[in-house]
Length: 296
Picture 1 (cartoon, rainbow, N blue to C red):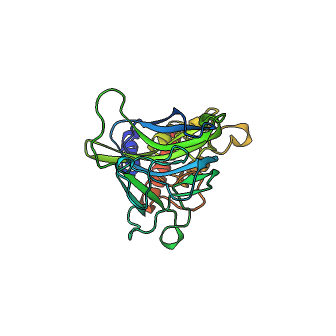
Picture 2 (picture 1 turned 90 degrees about the vertical axis):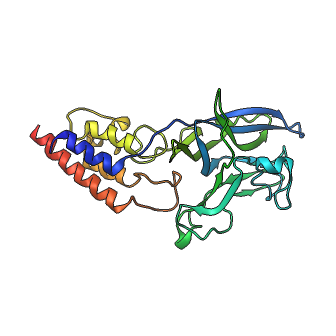
Picture 3 (picture 1 turned 90 degrees about the horizontal axis):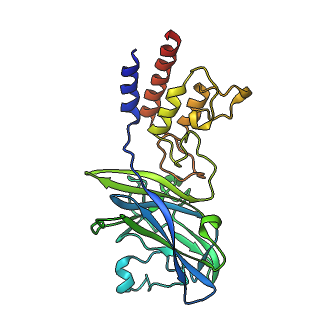
């Protein structure tokens, strides 16, 4: 098989749309409690439509286990069950609609909300992911959907989560946030994992350290597969350069398969595998590549 044909085969099995979304902390200053500081987690990018799951590694200020989401509508028009905005509490601010226990898609019926906070008053937690809350004990999470039009002109951004911390605490060093953001560009919706804070343990197969193992990582591994040389993590050698050789081989390919195109947070308590058809096509592609390299 020619290399171009192999490339087409792999592309059909693994194709995805890439886009740029980044996270940034904005300091909004003191809260009404002068011992606390208000921070806003902001996402920059075009076509941001949904905040899927998020996890916050680290303690954030809570007042009570009630205000886990305050949408823009409720900021000015409070409704029973949601409460008003509170500058001493941490909660989700993104979106006009929350779908409780609605992900992954196909896990209907929609159930109770997963987003949960602990603590109050004082430091607690705020997360939007359950490793066993879905049907049959599979991972699930809430989704926050933006129904209004996206802003236009200049920097395109959306505020995601208000986080309140003690005055001396900087979220850039004290917290690690992983989130899955879905964007819609030209009618095509796609998602990607974005992170901010201390570097997490890499997801197996995530060569470019985006938090998600996808076509870009496979392309990096493919370029070095069974080729002479000494390689590292970013080249597709995911098993720690066994024997000091640094090969990119079938063992690295197997490691990548365990996480390829999974939407769950990493590290995840639940277990999952890629779609069987994708595994088969990727494995066939790898076997073809072995033959191609050998003949070359």
